[in-house]
Length: 242
Image (cartoon, rainbow, N blue to C red; front, side, top):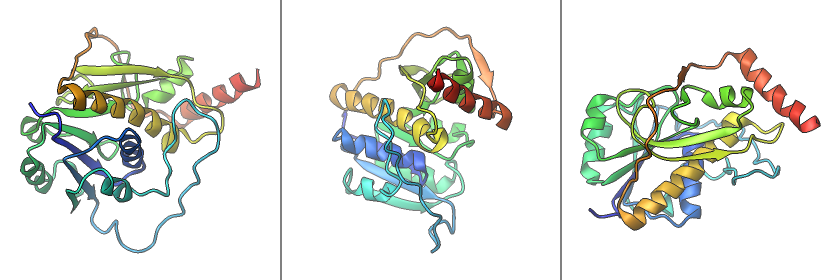
């Protein structure tokens, strides 16, 4: 199997910005990229972008002022831009098949599940989950992990229809973010991108995905309540003050 046919399937989001910048920082070459956005999203009129914090962190934070497209131009010559509400849009499936990719790096919209049809027709589909699997499955697990005082974890897995239950190919623990840092916009995206880029770089050298044996146990978490999210952030500030 060739270790060069890598497709980046990305929604136009801050997380995809982080992924593209991390891939570029490691000198990874893509065979193709598909950037999808909701219809009308490219119309004039943009929200003000935040500035990248100068706070020291365990991983490099993405620069919101470097667009996904700007990074992609340096990663591959084959870029498609497609309007699609969902990753499961048939237009995206057709475009993916045309790339003849051996590996898909996926960065979609939050809350959308990749459907069975797309997964069945695709090569290995890699997703970075911001939780230590199998302990933290589901949504917004970074906040539940912080509430438990366990810092943060990222697991890169091969997607299957069941949520966060595919083969795990890599896991890494990260320290809690510094107080005051926007976790959703910066830190969550940065730690996912960091491990994903390392996994892809290794695959590009070997053409192999190593699976980690993990027990089929753990807890499923759902979208964190705003109060719990606030408590997790307060815990970070309290620890910093001690």
